[in-house]
Amino acid sequence: MDFLKITKVENVTLEKGQVITIGTLHLTTHQIIFRHADRKGELWVPYPIIHTVERRLCTTDSKLWPLTIRCRDFKTYSFFIQLEQDSMDVFDTIQKLTCIESISHVYAFDYKPEKEFSSSDGWSIYNVFQEYGRMGVGIPTSSWRFSSVNQDYTFCETYPHTLVVPAKISDNVLNHASKFRSKNRIPVLSYLHWQNKASITRSSQPMVGLKKNRSIQDEKLIEAIFQSNDPTLPPGLQSVFGSTQTNLIVDARPTANAIANAAIGAGSENMENYKNCDRKFMGIDNIHVMRESLAKLVEVMQTADAQCLPIKKQNLDRSNWLKHIATLLESSLIIIKNVHIASSHVLIHCSDGWDRTAQLTSISILCLDPYYRTFRGFQVLVEKEWVSFGHKFTERSGHLSDEKYFINSINTNAANTAFNTVQSKFYNQPHVREISPVFQQFLDCVFQLLTQFPTRFEFNEKFLIELHYHCYSCQFGTFLCNSEKERMDYKVTTKTYSVWDYFNSNKSEFLNPLFDGGAEDKEDMGNNGVLLPDEKNIKYWAGLFNKKDEELNNNNNGETEGFTARIRWKSDSPISRTNSPGISDADTLKEGLQTISFKPVNYDDNPDIDPWKNK
Image: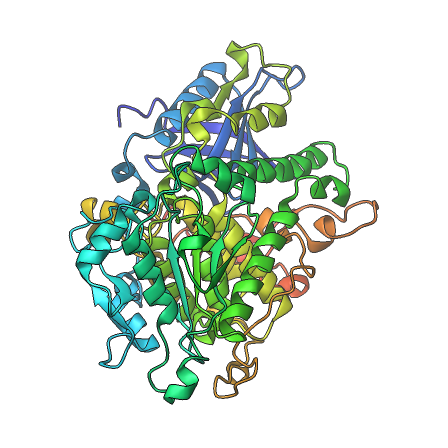
């Protein structure tokens, strides 16, 4: 507790949107807790979800010391503290507890639910043998096999321990082929299509370089992938289904980026060495462009909120956020059509194969297989394509944070500098260059699909928003670390709870009442069971940004109808969004999202809320 300079400050004023309340601020090892003086309930802010903190000069009129906290779930809290020393101690304590050196210090390793979850199979919800076995891998006639070449993670530190590769390719060939792929991330199987056994495989970029290097083993591996077929079909049809002449290599990057990578020894495939296939560059920008795009989008909303002005859609559009979402959906549509309609195999890669590649594989697979649109199937998809294949959650989510996110305007020349400008500059500093909303963009695409196909998903929008929150909260172990190997090293599965246990124990909150499971008819060789996304029919995900839909997706410049936000109150369940008693959610039920308007709430209507439980 030595790093807690202060644990309690009374008579603190909290300003959140249009609500101003007075209460007591508590600082614990893992959270900020604000308890209201005039009503039950607590506001919890976990340290890892904090994005930036600014301590400003004392206000002239009220003589209070402001502390503004902006969070990664796009909420903003302003605390006004009476004493300068208290404000300084609060600032220093939050900084110390947010900027940690090791992932082992996060809340997940200490978290214990007050009541054990009714579901407890979260850590085993994805089983590589069961899931790929469901696709047909492992049977004697399969064109694919399980490989244990990476069982100790020495083959590839960022890949899962078990890989699925063509049956005719030996582990010896894999070892040689790995030298030709960035980070040794060779082409391996992500998905076999239920209709025709056409495959989606994933990898990192080839190490071609300016000298146009080649690898016979890599070429043999890809040839075997592209020649795999459905053994249950008659010989005459095997050359049509799953082994066509239109196989596709998808390079997710802009062409210029791929060419630039050749200068550092990498690049894209020399198609002269890869027969009977095409290549497409999808033009998806890198993590730095996406980070800046989100920063611009958030800045537009924050500026409008600060000035109490409506949000102009044209200002939002300048961020290019929806353009990036459209590119992801359009690229996925190309993959979906090649697999489902053309019966082609598709190999997907970007640079290292853990960002844009994961986006394209998971979106495409989600549209191709209705199993992944079920509540449990979606969890399997996230575990398989994101967690096991080494998306760098700790780095991309900024779990360890950095002191540069803490702005003490009192001791700098920034007292008169707008916070948004400072925040925007931070995105370009070296210490945050690995942070990027890659997983958020995937969830955004899922939201777009849920909007376009409201009856084809078993889960609702609230589930996606909660999932985004827990990507940053560090309350559960699911999204900790950068690879399967790191999670093994930190013993995450034995020392923390899985986020899926939380979701599955509260399943009723996250189900889509419009879901029609009968619509997913895979027996029909048409498009039943397969979704074709419309990249032109998209909108800003208002619920994620704590806004009403009309605030972000209205082309007129009329006045906004008021601000809304979902307050996080402590309850018997884990830190989670819950309904506020006495507030009607009729307007938001269609979106599957519960909101709380900024007006006084009668917490006496809910006697089950105990603000001191688990304190």
